Image 1 (cartoon, one colour):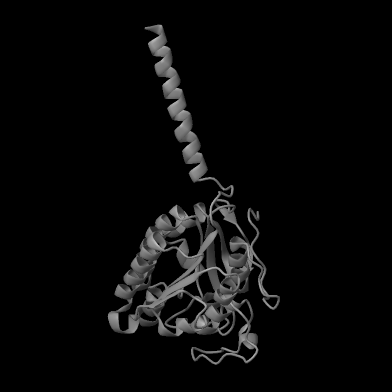
Image 2 (spheres, helix red, strand yellow; image 1 turned 135 degrees about the horizontal axis):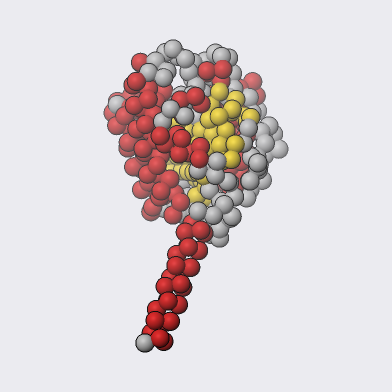
Length: 294
């Protein structure tokens, strides 16, 4: 009897230890083995001060390395900001100063082209047509546009989320970009920080939560950020409400609840390169966000 009880106790201790280690490893801030992949998510029009007024926003602050002090570029307009996010230079250098695509003749490689040049793969999913200009043809293996203008922005957001999840589950690429335009549309239509704005933000966060769940299974480090903020019914000025955006990093080597301080939207591309282990182009102006950067 004593031997049976002893064996049972040992078995319980082993089981408890195994699951404790398993849980610890799953939530560990240490780097894990396996391919290094990056998922970059842009929520168009997300003001940093709106984040703390949502439950999932509070969760992200507690469970990621984050900054609520990221400065975007001027003009604080969608296409110029995303060009700067992907190319790590100001609009003066990449040449796009409005939502009309007019790149400089000297425009160099952005994230997608750099990934392609390293013989890695990339995919983008988006619901505003002009976002397709931020990558050159042939630099991504998947480029899926789901038109918010015709389907409706809430539905298009949902479909972008579903397409991203399906891609991550079935054919994960080294780099994935997901763009969500619903929030910005509600800001223009009903006002930044309006009831409709917060509805769109919570719906966007709900989609992101599902995407992150799948991304973790495929060893993705996830970066969530925005292009610009907004005030009243618009954006594009140098007001803090337009120029200040949040950023969150969830993944290996990045701590939980770690405030990264002041950053720039130009830091996004170098950080993606760092996570993927590739060399950024010399002309990029941003700085990679170091791991465990406290």
